[in-house]
Length: 472
Image (cartoon, rainbow, N blue to C red; front, side, top):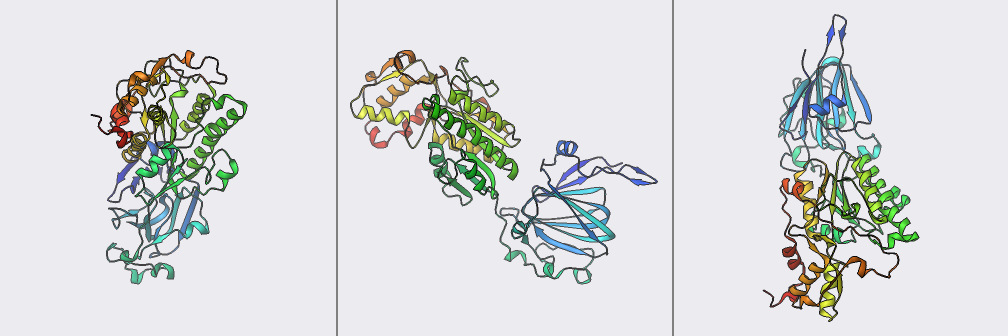
């Protein structure tokens, strides 16, 4: 008996599957789709939601070539067909072909955007296919077609098309030179008004397949806003939105807002990603830890001290339930917008000598480096899961970073007065607890091939060139 086996083809993602057919004199039995076994054998966990059957009662019936906006898994219950596929997706493999005879013991996984066709060789033929989206007239309008007789594809139909039975529509499909390639699924950046959102927008400015939305366009804290948003074009969702007002989160109003954005809002994005089979990139925080560990690894259980950290930890747990996700944990982000580094540079310029805490230890993260790391994850595609991402280098206190800012902008670093957290916040109400150590282990992201910049080099690059004039 044939063993279950998965074979690759010249078309990326198009897979041919050998199916076992145990049987006796009475007939045979097959597991046409068996998720656990087939995913283990190498098939994508594509989540079928609809099963269709095309019944073909005569030899020579020929259908296609149709590229559809979903993945599908095709096989034959009775009869035998000649299957043919042409890659109609945008990219280097556009126009690549594969053909294969399909009987009950063979199945083929056809990724979105690959044109599918078949010709009946033995009738009646029950051609069955599972798809991972529901058919609709709107979805059908997104089909891409190719002529069955296209000379470039040069499909060797066993029964000449002149002798085959084709529909009028299938006869009228365009040649390959006239086909507009199927574009890749788009990328959505949520929270485009924040430091990371702006950095991603700048990094991906030249890409036509990226949409960056602000809270005015999509407010994940509001169910009606999320329900009204069309996520269907997106294969990747990057969540750069968060409620980050740490102290405000300790107030009654701020607590509600933090939970609405960082937990409930994240849950809505998780469900949107699940429905669209999209990759979700979500940004987490060092505040999910209590800061007692010298270095925090990706495997450390959450132990948040305050409301902000609790809401972020809650959102993290929701994201982790999605199979295709990257949970990016970071700390001390510095980018375009209000941030600690630019505040210190402004104080130095105005002659103000600040007191800065010296018992909170960590590393800064330039927003542009965080964006670059996210781009790397989506390009390299390491295993889904949690990845710590900050700049590298010797961990420093906030006071040490402030002193570096003063020195790099031509001011005396001795103007910084180091103080303890307790002293700094003495007599102030509504202050959220902070983790004492926010150092994140970077071994996992480094192992994927991404090397974070050293934080002082990144700091120097961030500060305005004019502020660094004359500084060696």
